[in-house]
Image (cartoon, rainbow over all chains, first blue to last red; front, side):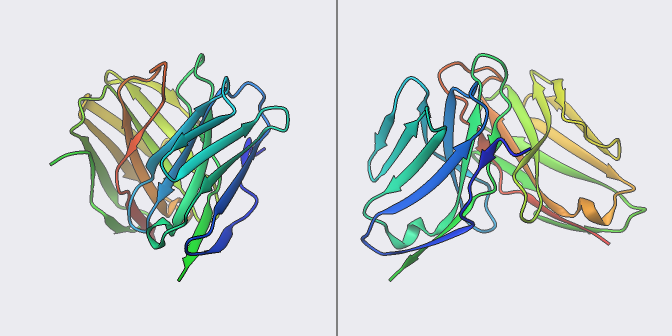
Length: 113
Length: 116
């Protein structure tokens, strides 16, 4: 059973527009969520996170929104840039229990010129 | 050299071979992890080490044998693997296993393993 789901395997967005990457989770105990970015031939790189006590966290062009009632989070990138083309992994964990981070399958983002 | 490094970057081995993957972190972290990423599957946590002690074995077959001689180094010893073990093996580290405010893990580039 997949606890963290990224239902869109890929997404194409025009340069300069907004990219929205979605993630759903099933475990209501998750209280901390992370987004990682992965380029080919490299390991995932931490991008941004959000605690369950918040519904929004912003860092430059990246904003993560959390809707706890819907068990849904999204990553917004605006404006999208060519260097944003990568695979984005959504991940979740339970801070008070252990350090196991559950990852989604990832969404490949293509930024079109 | 900084960050998390992994060697080799690519490995091809037969089912009867014995090989080892190496991970080294230069971040002063105390927790290290092995992950497996297969095609079209989520990242799977394999092992967790906290201060050199294994704290988690996520039902990994015994043909994968981890070793953590110190907080900076982590090995994954491989023997009698199967073709379905072909995947990208990622090493990661974090300051502590339960780091409170954040659980940011820093990943190495991975070892692309092909088992023939």
